Image 1 (cartoon, one colour):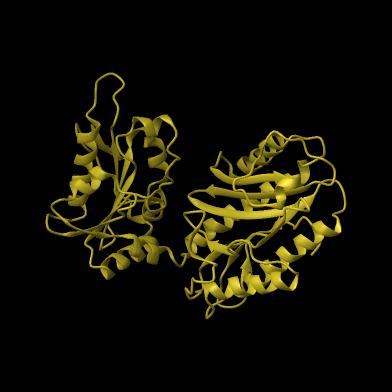
Image 2: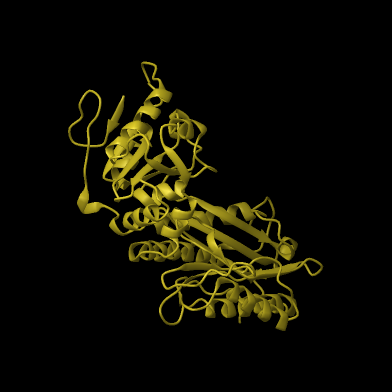
Length: 401
């Protein structure tokens, strides 16, 4: 049975319309981008695009809900901004809480007492969603060919299919005020994790125990368990990049360099920050030299994040700062962040995307001394404004600048 979230449920469907809760600005931006590529609608399959279009934070596909489902959550959005969320029925409570689409459809893929034809239910729900937003055979439908299931693409045989990726990237390029509020909240949760690390990273403690304490503090700050990514590395492992590099079963030692790159997703939006410090001892000159280079590179790149500059200008500024300290750039200098932890534009020498107010970046230059057994990366979340950039992260750097 394919059901629609709502107060009245018939033998086949029920519906709910929540115009007062619609993601007006995000869906309008997406609709405008669809019109620009000549699409009548889009079938969105990437988790981040589904979240952007409907507000539904797609769970990591590792639980029973994902196993019960025939297909992933999808969002169908028309060129006029009408939206439908197709969610596995196992996520009914989550969809009821989060979805701000015009219509939310729960798709059964598993029956506890009677067998269910999950494939038929899934494809019927897709057909119904396209009809619900006014799309008929012969229309132009945009999909992401790199992520849309083969059966979704095959089901669109009666439509002209185009690539949606240019439209979704354009819509998501500049954040809405609502998105910026969510990114601020995510940054605050990430701050709590970095403060926890400073509190609990003591000599004799195991990296796995330390990370457990950090993630507990993160969940408390968020008010619920949240997905996370990143790494915790200590000692000689901070002297090179092997991402992700930990945590592992290792006890911290006095004087160790500790580096944590922490990314958390809160209500569908990410924060990504890195801090570095020495365990229970003043940092050595080598540790300070690496940190100061990374910190100065961060400051230089962040200062370039203002309207009129380009993404490549921020990378060039970070590289110049590293050179002044006697280092070379080892990796990119950062990336924009939003419903994905790492998105375009990225701070690299070949990305000349103009910087605009409302973009939000994680700036993360780093330097590494394998032979010295120490390294540093300095990363905070930065909002581009009409004036000076605003640093959304509030955690304290672990060493003196």
